[in-house]
Amino acid sequence: MNAKPYISPDLRARVTEQARHRCGYCLRSEELLGMLLTLDHLIPQSDGGPTTEENLWLACHQCNSYKGTQTCADDPVTGLSVTLFNPRQQNWIEHFAWSEDGTQIIGITPCGRATVIALKLNVPEIVVARRMWVSAGWWPPQE
Image (cartoon, rainbow, N blue to C red; front, side, top):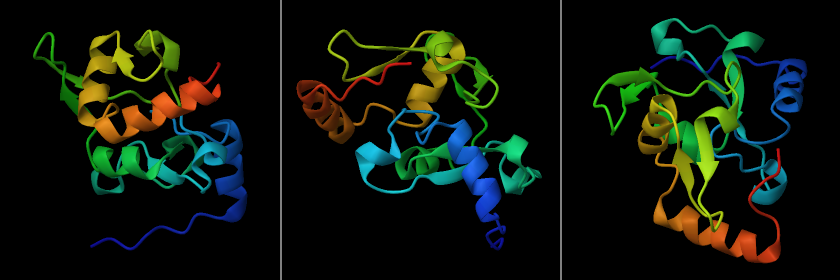
């Protein structure tokens, strides 16, 4: 098993600020979760991804766990293997939308659809939490 790479506090702070303190995939914030998010290697270390600012982005524990070492997944509409969403290089609103009630993330491109499925962005537990956040006026996040 690979040792965790050292990430300096300065590098972590820069990436956290760039990500606006929220997960690049599901958009949950550190403030909402009440905890620090993790740093995701966009290209996994196991595939040679470096521990550099350009290859790191903020992710919640759930998204990071489901992503694991995946970089591609099948689009459920076309059946083709596509690259997962890259929050450092791609714009969230070009690939995803919120359901009318604000509780589910809808993939609107092959990349978005594949990412929703691969990272399980709409597991029942999070949909319930989002419903509560919507009723409190905390969700969905505004770009």
